[in-house]
Image 1 (tube, one colour):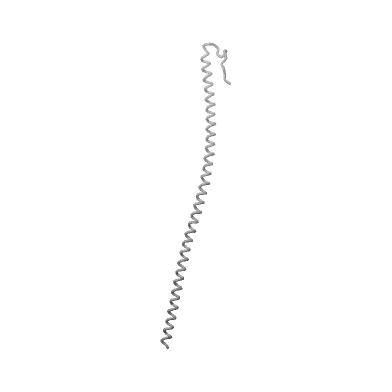
Image 2 (cartoon, rainbow, N blue to C red; image 1 turned 90 degrees about the vertical axis):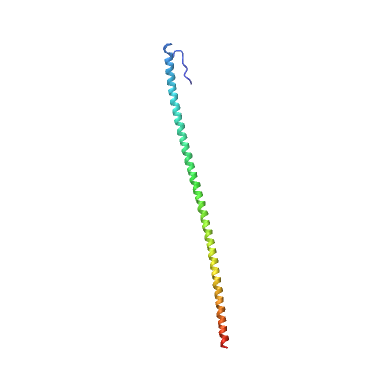
Amino acid sequence: LTNVQGSSAGAGSGEFHVYKQSRRRELDRTKAMLDAHQHDKDSSAWLHTAREKMLADSLKTAKNRAKRLKAKERRNRQQDLSVMDVKNDQDMKNDMNQNDQNDQENDMNQENDMNQENDHNDQEE
């Protein structure tokens, strides 16, 4: 609803322009106040949504970071286990080789002992 000026707006024809300017200043002032209020309202709404988005983003980032760290730990644990398995396999192979060598040495010693006994027996005869 607009304010329409009637025919009895001013006191006289000389005062008409003064009244009109005064009315324009007041309307401009109220419009500026309303615009400032609306701008403040919009700014606070924008800040509120921006904070909510930042919070949501930081929560999502934290969740993804935790997920990445968990996967990294799982990979490292599996890698450590595979390294341990390789070491255990190598240790077992080394033990088996050592046992085989010991068995061969024992067999050779037994053969030597038997040969010496046979030689000794042959010499006595």
